[in-house]
Image 1 (cartoon, chains in turn purple, green, orange):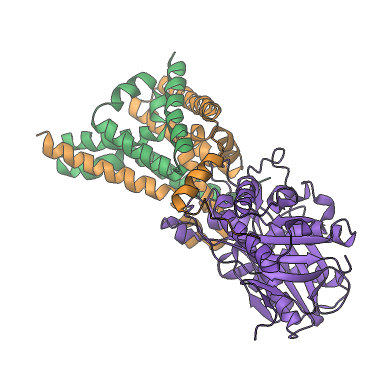
Image 2 (tube, chains in turn red, purple, blue):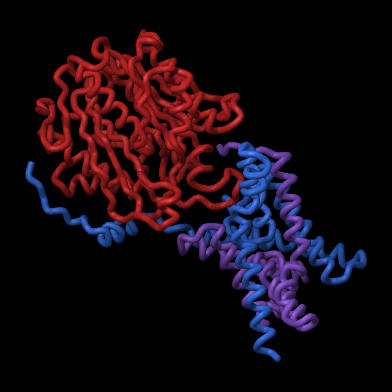
Length: 339
Length: 118
Length: 152
């Protein structure tokens, strides 16, 4: 019997799992952005002393994991599971980090939705009674993503106005059965939604329908009013995707205009940093949540958050074959204890 | 005077490329292929020749000029050597540029490393 | 909460809706940049060509040497990490000249050096330039054959 299931796509936890610690690492460009004071580590060189961008990304993930565990006042050996993924083929960053960390590992691919995907599954494992401590984490790296999905770094081309900038960064969250910190009340798992957008320079528009669908499902399933949350935060829709999401959600009868924002718009100063439509990548919602949001929640400046990381599930192969971009979005409801 | 001609013709050819890039979803790779092919066709039809006469490097340095040399080389060789010329002429006339691209490309790739973007 | 009937549900409608949101590229500004930089690159080439002609090279050879020098400059500036910055502003003004072709050869080769000298640099040298040569050489052969069959 699925006694913890409410509505069609949402889980309500009996004993809500607690996020006992987080940490975030970002690259130099993100470190110059408006959220710089919230990140634990800002790299001076995004090669991070490694010989390739891929290894640098993996190191970022590994070191962020260690720091998150430390911030949660736990030991690495306390971690019973690791839920992690990234954008590289066959999850190179996550798998290589897991090799060094030696924690039982579930590799996840959810494109840029990995932060809430890993938090969702982690929270279910904790509430299910299968573990007491685990770590959910993800990363992306501008240079490794650019080279896999787009063009070589030194290749001359003009970025489109709708294009987004892949965040170099990693975020990790320790989820525990007991402890201090904000708790996870609900998770709403998204369906793949695809309204036929094929332009890989306009991921926001491709993912927005999935984000809107998950947000609407969350409110339908929980029956909560939209103003319940201090902040509803999507992962990396950027300027255009954010506008579309607002309107699609409004179209379904839910007004989130006042308390909705997008991590991709928070992490960079799009005008000054020339990032066009905003930030993107797994690291975008991961660092904004594990850095900015978590710290503001600990200070009780924010108390109720709905985090919806958004992913574009295309590959180089699928887009070269002319297929449209399927979108995915998972929502996690994170609430300060006693608020 | 030939500097002004080169500037204007070269600039205009690049503007055509820019309008294609902004107005369509073509990538730089598509633009390069389209320019070489159309340069070759315009060259074979005898339309590009007067542009080269007028614009000098303004017409030969854009990739349409590369296509023009390919077509011109092929046709000139056919005149001299018959059907075999169709196969050898184009590549012969552009061999210098292609070999330079391969050799310099290789050397630069070995010497330098890509820099991360800010 | 009542569920309203979705207005934006079909792909076609959604595409039109998104297109209205997408900002239009700055056609005039981009074209001016392309004109300016493309023009400057060709003028530099003309300068080189004139020096070569004055030093006694015949027209064909001078043209070939000019192309070689422009390819070198494009490759060198790519190595230094400057060419992509020029292109970011100049767009087609830096992509369409032969120096942009050199950029498209060096940049992937450099990027994939860590994958080795044969399957990395060797193979990736032509990842963007390969198609250019395929269609360029291909059309020259076809045009040569057409000329052979139709003009005699």
